[in-house]
Image (tube, rainbow, N blue to C red; front, top):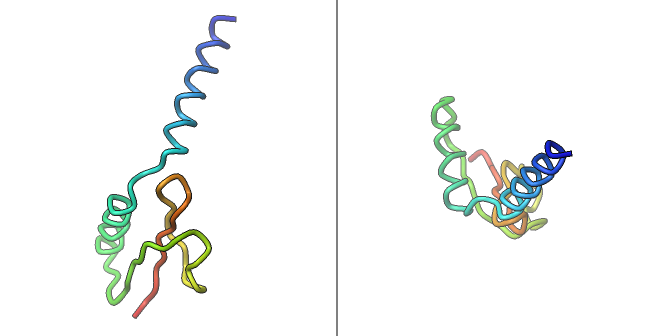
Length: 74
């Protein structure tokens, strides 16, 4: 029973941290660094409200899922 309560507590803490999400600028910087490390050139990353990417590829979600980071090759 004790293990079950500990597991439930850990799950509750991790889900609340996940729901908060990362700040958009921080996540955008991380994605930018990964793309540069892979040698990707001529692209743009934009932070937009969820669902307003206009057909661009969504590569991240931030601020509790209210915003998205979209990728487009130039």
